[in-house]
Length: 439
Ligand SMILES: Nc1nc2c(ncn2[C@@H]2O[C@H](COP(=O)(O)OP(=O)(O)OP(=O)(O)O)[C@@H](O)[C@H]2O)c(=O)[nH]1
Ligand SMILES: [Mg+2]
Image 1 (cartoon, protein in one colour):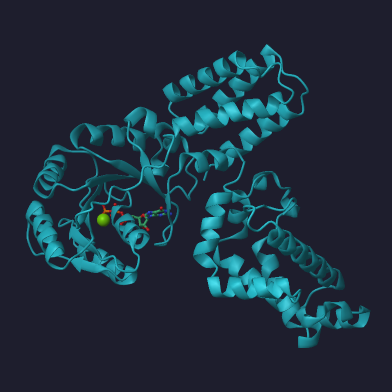
Image 2 (cartoon, protein in one colour):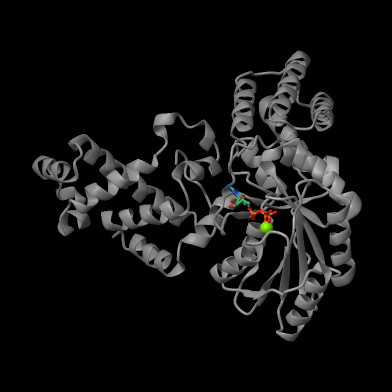
C-alpha cells in the first residue's frame, strides 16, 4: 500500500546508516530526500513542507551530529514525526454504555460505504453482542438488497423499510434496535456523485433525528488528494467522528492517508485493504509509520496470526515441539496456516526489514505448492524421520513430485531451520515475542 514510499525511505536510511558521522549538509540533504519522497507519494504540499522542516529542525537541534549512531537517530526523528502526522494514537469507536450505539456511515458514491458497513459489523461482532445493519440508501435500486446479502454473510440482523424518508427509516431502525436489544446499529446511507446540498441536508436530518454516537465518513484512498478535500468538506457540514479510508490495497500512493489528519482535522479510524469482509484494519499511527518506514509491523502480524491460527492446534504444536517431535507433516500444516494469513509477500512486508529482502530470498506463493507436493510424495515413515532420506529416496521423491533432488534438499534445510526457529521462539516465551534473525 505504501510500497514506493517504503522503498524510498529504506534507501535513504540505508545510505545514512552507512555513514559514520553526519554533517549539517548530510542532514539537509536527507530532509530534502524526505520531502521529495513525500511529494512523490502525493502527500499534501503543506503537510510535506511542515514535515520536512520539523524533521530538519529536530535533527539539527538534537545531538544527531555528535551521536554515535546518527543514522538511527535520524530514523527515530522521522518515525516520531510520521506518527504525529498520522494522528499519534488510534481513536477507537465510541461504543455507548447504553445500547444501541448508532454508527452512521456516509460518503460519496462508490467510496465503499456499504462494504465498509458490513466489514464494521464483522469487526465488531463477538459472542453476546448483537449487531444490526440498516439500509438507508433508497436511491440505488439494488442497494438495499446488497446490504441484505452482506448481513447474511456476516450473520447479523438486518433492517429495511419501504419509505422515501431516510430520516424516518433511520429512526424506525433505531426503535427496532431498542426493541430487539441490539448493541450496535450501523446505518448505510446513500452517496452522491459530488457533495451537494441535498445530500448534506439529508445526512443532517438523519443526524439530528437519531443522534448517532459515531458519524464515520468513508473515502476512497485511490482518489488521493480528493479524499482529503472531501473529508474537509464533510467535516464542515457534519459533526464527523472519524474517517475510514478504503481501497488502500490498490496502487494508492498513500499520500491521502498521510495528509488527512493534518488537513481535515479528522482521525482515520480504520482502513479498508481489500474487497473481502475481513479486509478492515484498525488504524494505528505507530504501526502504519513502522510499515511505511520499512520497520515492519510485528504487532499487526501477531494479531493477524492470532485470528488465523486456532489455539488448539497451536497448543498441540507446542507440545510436539517440547517433545521434539515436530515432523515434516506438521511443517506442511504450518505452511498451510501461513497461507491463510494472506499472500506471503504481504506477510513479508509486515516483518522488520521485509521490504528490503532481495527478490530471490523471499518465499513466493508458488513455492508453497512445491513444498506440499514434495512432502506428499514421502512415505509416512520418511515424514516422521527425514534423516533416513538417502540419495535414492530423494531421487524417488523428486520424481514423484515433479521436482529436483536439489529442491528436496532445499526443503529439508528449510524444515531444519524452521525447527530451530520454533525452538528459539519457545525459549523466548514469557520474555515477549521475539523474531528470530534472518526469518
Ligand atoms: N480493493 C478494494 N475494494 C473495495 C474496498 N472497499 C470497497 N471496495 C469495492 O468498491 C466497490 C464499491 O463498494 P460499495 O461498498 O458498494 O460502495 P458504496 O459507497 O456503498 O457505493 P454506493 O452505494 O453506490 O454509493 C465494490 O466493488 C467494493 O468491493 C477496499 O478496501 N478495497
Ligand atoms: Mg452503498
